[in-house]
Length: 126
Image 1 (cartoon, rainbow, N blue to C red):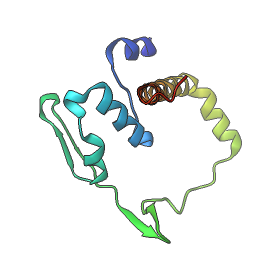
Image 2 (cartoon, rainbow, N blue to C red):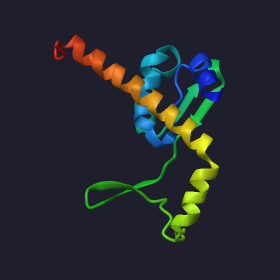
Image 3 (spheres, rainbow, N blue to C red):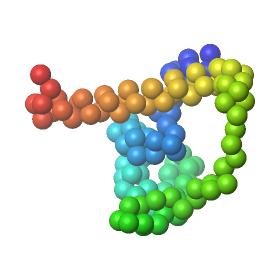
């Protein structure tokens, strides 16, 4: 039922885990509201979509180590979780995992479709 709801009512369902892909798809599928969102995100500024009543502030602290951008907000005290506990959680959240991967796959298909369209425009797809 949740999958049907997503397919019927949402043009794009993205995730912060795949921010660049999400913003690319949003810019292309809903350009009226999201044109330039990726550029704004990359500059870490305030993104405003007043007509949608959406205001997003990007302030993800990043730092440079050995010429690489890394996230400073890593949890260095991550506790060890027994594999049995992880497996039990996976079993108990089967529907949630399935829905999450459905949305993620849908986002990737949308992104792939944009790239295929781009390849076709340049005559690279035969």
